[in-house]
Length: 141
Image (tube, rainbow, N blue to C red):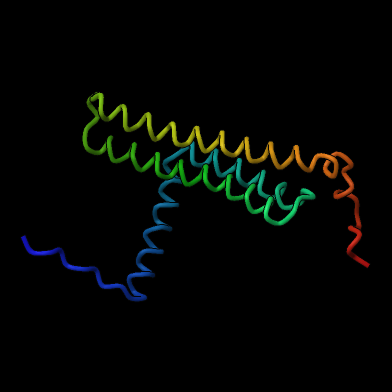
């Protein structure tokens, strides 16, 4: 058997890949209610992560934990759509694959809760004062 042809990698392929990614994002947005709910969750909590009085690394980890949920949901949706495209009849391995995808999303949510909980708990003395919500902030003249 001859070796498979290697894919040509150039900027045209890069832009095609970006186009496919955008198409996938819009398909998930259009056809997946769970994905839309996850995006709302991320849209609400991302600004909160930015304004909370925690260091930049903590903010980045909080936002990354939110985006991990979206990534897991996209992969779960891809698994479900692929299995449904192959066959809609009930098969134990198909159910197992779908359940594993759902478990990945569930674990991503647990990860997010734990990350946020640890960061909020360790910074609670600064958060509880609500000092960061006062206007103008102290760094403005």
